[in-house]
Amino acid sequence: MEPSHGIGGGRMKRVDVHAAQLGLSRNEYLRRLITQRLPAAQPRTTVDDLQRSAERFKDALDSQVMDNAW
Image (cartoon, rainbow, N blue to C red; front, side, top):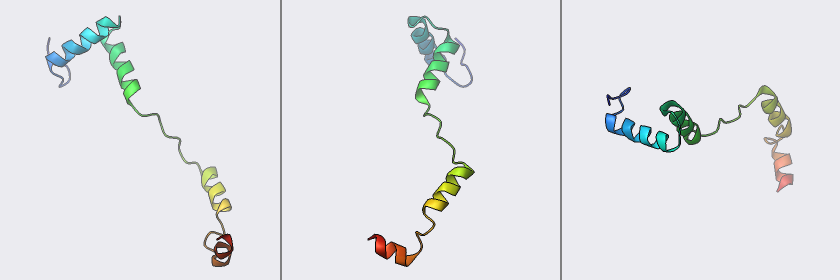
């Protein structure tokens, strides 16, 4: 087996063996493996999120408010 995109033939053979054991094609096996290993996408911060945060903490720099909080 020839190397595939910089991956040695021995490793590709192991990929093929694992895929065959699961009854999957190489591509499907690799797709599933990558999907399982990648972390879930992190939610993005929106303008609304920032506006809510700014509203909620608008007096955080007010020393009198902070003194009363503790």
